[in-house]
Image (cartoon, rainbow, N blue to C red; front, side, top):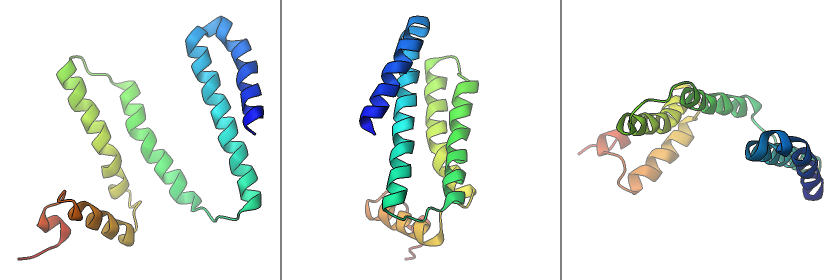
Length: 130
């Protein structure tokens, strides 16, 4: 699989680098890695049966695209505004996962326990009472 992906990368590089330069090389490398990931996925599915929650996988991919598209469509001017915007986009992803109901109750409990054990949540968020 790896050798095949390397061959795909080489052929695509020969096609795209003369026209697009380094950007073409970056895209062809991405294409080769996507090919390799897909091929390994198909082969491993035949060897090991893992039941994927396809709806959850599609939901998290969609959620991840929202901040990514926002980052492409709007680039604020000024370094300070740009940094605040980037922080907002980073925080938007976990917020969207919670709002979309992506996490089950057990997953939320495990997350709150993990964050609380490191002192990253206030006691009221964790549900502790005095």
